[in-house]
Amino acid sequence: MFLDDRKKALVRALIGGIIGVAAYLLLSFVAQPGALLGGSFELAFTFCFNSRVPEGLGAALGILLWFAFGAEVGLSTLPFAQDGPALVKRSLLHFLVMAATVSAWTLLNFGLLELSFFLVLLALVYVLIWLGRWVGWYAEAAAIRNKLGLAPGPSLLKWRETLPYLPFALGLCVALPLALGLFDAADVPVLRGLLFPWLLLPVGCFCSALSLGRRKGICPLYPLACTLFTLAAVFLVYNQTAWPYCIVALACSLAGDLIGAAMRKMRN
Image (cartoon, rainbow, N blue to C red):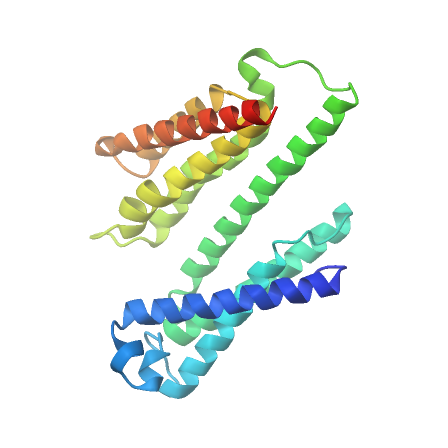
């Protein structure tokens, strides 16, 4: 087991598995509009783009794999362990199991050539989530030290408070578009041109800045860092026509920071 509390682990895994199957059915409906309403039973539950197995078996394997992936995501909502070595070992084991599930689904639906893309994408998301959690743990430790009277006063422009969030911003604004560029199509860059600048970037900047603002108040250096990191990505991944992405990063991170600071003030 990944967790010490097996009862909670089973409940979270079951809930996550059910959500995973629901997502599978939703994607099946999107991929084949009307299949769930008037098509055959097998077609309604397929969602196998290039499956090398019979349609019914592919549908059953698809449901099983999506249930397994949802269960694995559900387990990740609980802490794996209380001490450092066990946490690292169980996290690595959890990632390997998720990678095996994603690999099986990719081979079933696409093929060996697309496997590296999905594994790299999974690894990036995993690292970003881990960085986000590390920031949360760091903030909780700082709050404990503050209550004990051991924490120093606020730094200039709260640069010290912003520092733990910078690895996440760097991974989101620079490393993620670089990785997506390795797998994006040259003629229609959907991952770099649509998914990253209009979904991943604004959501990531807003949520991380919201977390920082709720814990530390207004930190003006974080929106500036997100903007500068995005500007670096413009030159490394895009070209000068992509400079509006910097405005997206600035606006979303600034909005998240201000809203988080307002929530902090109301709570206090």
